[in-house]
Image 1: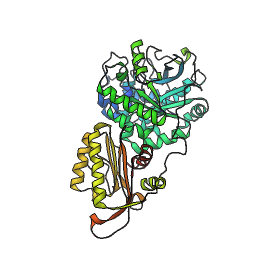
Image 2 (image 1 turned 45 degrees about the vertical axis):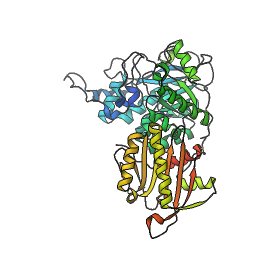
Image 3 (image 1 turned 30 degrees about the horizontal axis):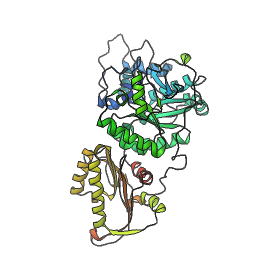
Image 4 (image 1 turned 90 degrees about the horizontal axis):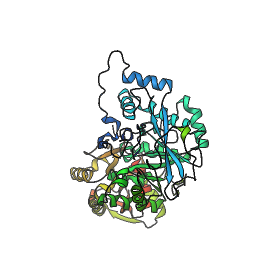
Length: 479
């Protein structure tokens, strides 16, 4: 289950199954099955854009859109809470908030609630209502610090201003709750700049970040380094499924991330002692599922047993890069070994990195700064089209680069005055291989292939990811 931002707590179905699912901030959670035996949610329900049209409404019944308006106006969204435990002791250390509509409403279930919000253009308003309900229900209960409250968050609303009516509850929550906001890989691939900005802001406010549904889509493994989650939530399919190469690939990536950045591994969907043993074998230290409790209203919560741990924070406030530096400047500041080469040599180096990314397949992220659209030649377009088919995410930035410069490739435009427009950068990021070529144009005239660049080659994972985030923040939202 995913965590939502400090100010957002909405409901979503329990990965391990649960009673009528509470609706999650993101579409994906809203459509999740309520039990392990339930039919799995289709892959394309991860985003609200795939919600089906509503059926005709009888003349004597409120339309779903008017029903939603009434729910939001009356403030009748409620939250239930599912316990999160420390696996070694079984002690409750936190809860995940799951949102629901009124019991007697046709919008009681998350699918109906969030599907209607998307069609009505009210997703941001619903997201805030769910967050406020989750925070309000947790205040004054065992969920207050030192336990943790996990909240799902909708990226489209993550950076929105706090509605005036929720100012007080958000202020109280910041003082009294340790909130963990859950994101999925889809959130980052759809709106990378907004999500990275939201994550940075939430961390400054003291919130923790979780990456949800890890193991369902290989992209979540590739994108983990960009979020640097404090908590990695293993999907129930990993805990309940049979041993496989996919499971092994997931665990190698998760353990690499946890070792590098101190992330907490939390297993979802623990329903039996066998599931518990699998979770422990996979390296999980925390978990949730029906074995430990189903979602319940706040009054019936069990006392919290121990403190939810804080992840080692190499990304503590102030340690993240700012937009005041470029990828080249950031890496060159830590590596004084200056090198100069022609474009012809750097082109060979960049193509080798692209080939490496192709071999890595769906676990690789490729982000490139080509300086300007004119360097996106027909041959380069074809290479990047193939890369987009084989890897998790491909992004290209530069002057006059459109939002999708090549089929499947995400784009971002640089202003001519942006110092990044004078750089040529290629990043390949994956769980087990990381490399970066960062170069600065020395301004030569004449033959294009003879142009000289000062450059660095970097294989340090932390340095490369930190610099690559600067380019990721330039990628335009997907519409």
